[in-house]
Image (cartoon, rainbow, N blue to C red; front, side, top):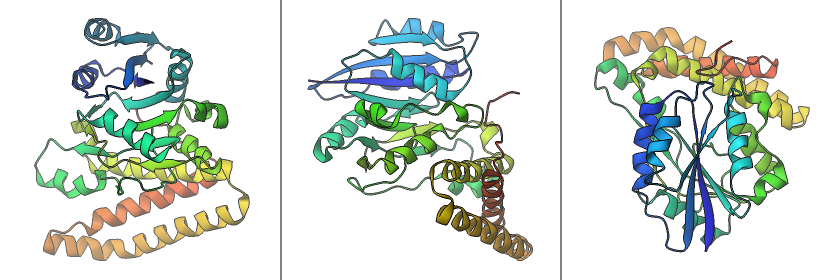
Length: 306
């Protein structure tokens, strides 16, 4: 029997946490697996405690309070708190809800491919139907692959890991606590260590996007931040040559081409109702973020206060 711990890191989102825990109640786990659940509350005021106490009546759920701010700290606390005989660790975020076969697919994919890490898709749920939201909705989609595809990176919002992975590459880097990107850094270290990382396309999780995120401003902030994190991770982990010149060329070309196309894109969009302006702004923001990452700047992540 395989022993897996499903870990949730949460920060001041008790209503979303309730939706997630309801989804975890409906999981169809393999009969050959023993499953436990751990919630790490990263809010200094412990706002998730009451929710977890209630759901511990229905799930084999344990609540842990980690008051030191930072998602890397919360993830590391989860790893440190799970039972010593846990073989696999699954991470899911507090604004997500899994489909019922999620954990079953992750575990079966791990078994079939003997993988060190198995990642799956996170599908954004867009609640609004107005034209402005629909213009940016495609940019919330993330790349998917055929099940069994070997991948080079993964996010920690939907991943199953062998416990031994942390012995090989270490924990999440807490230098990313104020910016986010700890999972980008971690998965890059896994890739550089030669670990086997596999995609499971049927291990689906749904991410609920609140109204605050459904704006062009938020989308461009995310593009800038992701570009900065990618460049920073490469700067920290890869040789200066050829990684840095290649990333600089990528960033420069994005900025140059997007800036040149932006005036024409605005005119075309006004005439045809297309989305070229959003494409250009997104690419421009991502390129600008890459430049800041190469220079060592560290923009604050979402929900982080100074």
